[in-house]
Image (cartoon, rainbow, N blue to C red):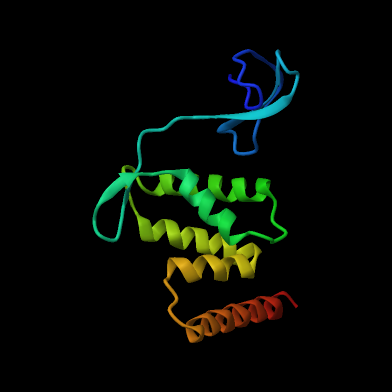
Length: 159
């Protein structure tokens, strides 16, 4: 494994453990040349999953696109990288369980919004505004009011 700091090719594994999802192994490594430590993840490689976009074109599923979208929506929010990784893992696992070869892009967006709505309203509205292509302030206000209404209903059912 190439060191991300000095680009040396030799590193040693200090610690290995399976993640909670049991499909990923987290390895703590140390570069032999510069002695700096870094983390790598090893995951099971599954067959390709194709994403069918709105215009009916297809491209290979890329979990990095989901991660980037969530990271952008969560900027300056109290959400850790670990939480974001967990959300991306959950979404990918669900998609692969539900769809064998092709998944509509709309389904990916819906799953991301569901997750964001459950743990951060601001990140949810940010993501939804791009995903649903909000064009005006009224659309934002309507979405926020709907979110507030849902949260109030959840609080009332918990009491």
